[in-house]
Length: 387
Image (tube, rainbow, N blue to C red; front, side, top):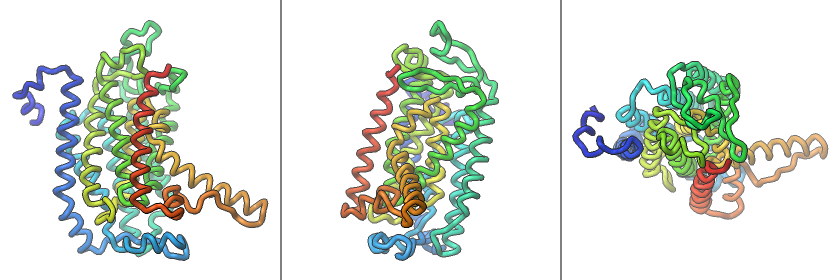
């Protein structure tokens, strides 16, 4: 119905690149409106159900409990306000049989359900402990492996620009196309079936990284917006033959990839709508319902566009957050074994709490991390031209 309506606009005569960009903008606006209009009812519903966010005890987080004590009881599971509008808006503007859309939306929905189960358990138990970590990792891995297997064994033919020795357009199945990883300063690496475990690792890692970043009002949503805009631009370019065939850019090409731009921009619109209620002081938290799903969505888009390596840069804030936790835990265990007492590198991890405990106001930490996310997104896009 949307496509029939667009046929009456001058847009239908525009190049495909312009068409997709316009559809992405419209989808972003629709997702934003759906999110912002649904907010009051969802908040009221969650408040009535007493679905408040449990806060860790002072014995666990010490001074941080004083800073975040006022957040006790704020409704959680606000990820519904992101994932629902984003997926609904996506399928209003794309072809539902697009394999890239099916994989990304499937991963997003599955991890949202996992996060919802985790949030419900926390609310029911009135503690910050939900599903066991091993259970969540197992489900994340299973979802990711299933999605990557579906993508790899998809035999729809794609036009892959720049992958043949002559630089001409080569024909190959979708699965063979996504098995190529674009590496800055090097070129294309075809990993074959190994893309299944590698891609699953990317999705699981990104999902948990965004989950770790979700600790301050608006932090994860704002950083996700920057990352999603960057990957939306990548998908838009990858779906256009002119851009992807350029000898100066490291891009795959498949026409269906362009619709990932629509998917990314619905994430942007829904996150903007969510931020309307999540900005400091937050009236609603996304919970694991949102953070696990958003991370999975970004990881899936990175795999579908063959730009997994760039995710380390574009999603640099998420990477730093995860690395801070890994370093803190590793150093603490090492020093406890060899020095008899565990020592810490940071005041507290994830690292946004380190700055917060260092005296910065919560809003200062959030905005500065947003700025860093935008800079890293731009920097990551610049690496497309590095060969």
